[in-house]
Length: 196
Image 1 (cartoon, rainbow, N blue to C red):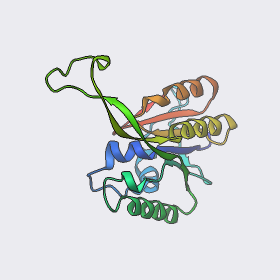
Image 2 (spheres, rainbow, N blue to C red):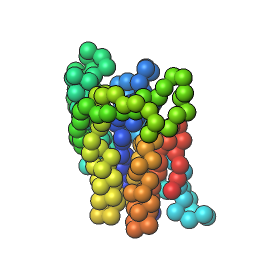
Image 3 (spheres, rainbow, N blue to C red):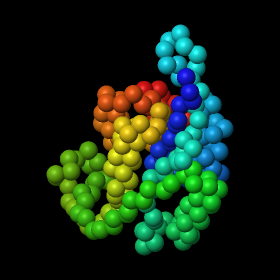
Image 4 (cartoon, rainbow, N blue to C red):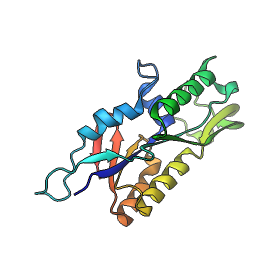
């Protein structure tokens, strides 16, 4: 059996805010992580009595990184916008074409939200007052990720996909992909790889 052509799909917002923020790994080298750690930790046997499959990162595009550019007016730090741009530039240069960014966008708008009263925190939202707040949402990243994952697997471009996210919104896409494709799925959740 030839090596499984593997591509990793990273939910950048989820990875950063779920694992990397406020750690020493803000500038994580995702390519080296997958080459030297993640692929080595996956044990997959095509059949119960078969030898473990070998895996290799896809030679043309090993990683698809889904994210959106930070909006300066909503950034938490003064250097957030420039730091994100520098990180993306470093990854692009370092990975030499093995990583591609798929960009969504941020949407910021005013919205009316219910207030949780301090004296009655169990009160239902319908019985609470509303105030106007700024609402910041990342748009298109989840849909882009699901579509790329699905299209790549069904087209036969990859033999195995590794998804890096904690977002359960992607479960229906994974279930559909599993039902329609022979592509092997791996879900990287925190520090564990969950086989499909």
